[in-house]
Amino acid sequence: MPEIAEPAAPQTDPEAKAVAASREAGFRARQQAVVVELGLQAIIANGVQEVLDEAVKAAAGTLDVHFAKVLELEPDGASFQLRAGVGWKEGLVGSARVPVGRSQGGFTVRSWGPIVVEDFRREDRIARPQLLADHGVISGMTVLIRTKEAPWGVLGIHSTEPRSFTADDVNFLQAIANVVTAARERERVEQQLLRSQAELALRVAEERLRRSERLASLGTLAAGIAHEINNPVNTILMTAESALIALENGPPADRLEEDLRVVIQEADRCGEIVGRLLEFVRYRRPERKPVELNEVVRAAIAMAQKTLGDHAFELDADLSDDLPNVTLNRAEIEQALIHLIRNAAESGGGEPVAVSVRTRRTDRGAIVAVVDDGQGIGSEV
Image 1: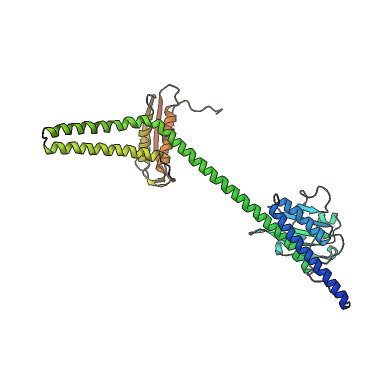
Image 2: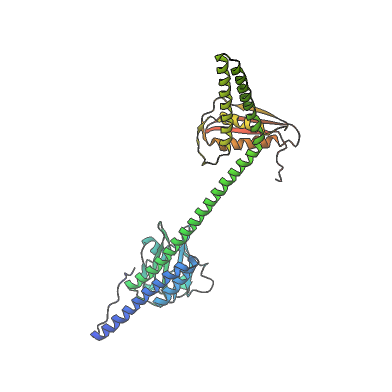
């Protein structure tokens, strides 16, 4: 493989050398301007493909070659796809495949560096793929387009005649490839940001839906809870009235103490009922901790039964005694079980339904099942 080297300067007089140096400096300045312009275009481009198309035009036009190409390494690593190009026969860009193997692009990927071929006819190690042979390509230069993790593809230029390329030419082509790399990284970050935004919006929507379901369930539970809390409140009122009457008659101390204990007991009972209700509907981040599954199931059964009113159903609870503690969010599991029990009880179409709630120990923890003999869901649904 030929080494990249500066062409030997011809022996001329000082004035001719100065003219040649000025011309060379102007050419390098033009290369730098092209890279800057391409970088600006990449900022406002509509996607990476537009940057690829501009990159091959800039490379071919500036280095005055017949062909320019961007080859993307395919997932199997065995071939490239011609993603963008200048000078190739119509229909090849976007469809042509080039085997990696001993191709110039393959050597570029494996070496992670530029590869220059001045004349394929005198090159033994690098094979000329069919794409280049069909277009009469004799020479070429390729540089790597990379990602942070691995090579992505190559940027190359080719000519139909022997051609030497200087180190400055290589640096120019690599600078264009770096612009492509930056454009690809920008698109990757933008796509990742869009995915993150979509995932966040989905999580927010799901949490709002769960909260709405809890609030809707609260409306259904209201009648049952009102009835449940009404009993201890009535007891408190009657006991308090009894104590007041007794005070007027000078009651014994033990009678007054007993009445006060009843009031405290029933007030605590009201607090527990309200606490369970608030736990059920309160918005909070899901917190999971080890709990006794049967306790959660019993609470769900109790709340479901209070909301079912006159529905004709029989509920059987078969709860295993050897369950391990299970890590879960109690409020979420209670809500799910209440919905399952209610749906089961309401599935009879007016006929009595038998509902069974079972818990069992498994190799991975525990399982809870809600089973009914209702009508079920039709196969078309």
